[in-house]
Length: 287
Image (tube, rainbow, N blue to C red; front, top):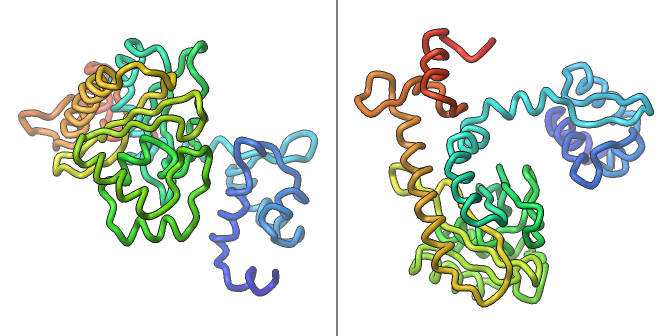
């Protein structure tokens, strides 16, 4: 595909190489990367050399490659992802202690839910969520919470792009998704029975910013049985309120009466008050 290669920027081709790696393909050879990216082996060899030099990929003894730890280091500086996860974690742990199944935190990424965190018990019901993994918006209760705020045009584009039917319960049409939007707006939460797996039931609520916008979804995955969803919904709403309050406090400027210690760093890390005071005095979290 020489024409496609020439029309792409250098950065776009590097991203294609990085995108070739996933949960099912954590280790790839040059030829495998070339096949997955549809780039010539010579091009992949050049791109992978630059990525390796910058420590964004690492070469293994068997000459395969994996994503480099520097990517994790860079991601850890992202307030919209890892910062949100840090702030939400104490509330997620509290909820998980009550539920003893799966508790997860997701944000919207294009037409998918990107999951930032998941806490699970070994005896919990089947769940397809992995940290850093995606599930289509329409196929997840967390996705339904995020979809509720989206426009009619967005729903039409989502359906036009194609919604994979993971089970017979997965909504795939504009009409089905709009009905779900109306229901979530009305009741303030989403319940999805068997959307991803027949044995699993997802329940999710929104996490809102100070201006009321939905920034994330907090959900549980439990057994798909006749147990009422109400207690789970109330538990999630309580945790979501706690996360929303902590988010607001974390973004208050230093000197504000409601600001927490180390306020300017709380968008990236959530630690003890003494630790946050130390970071503030130190003047940074590292170079």
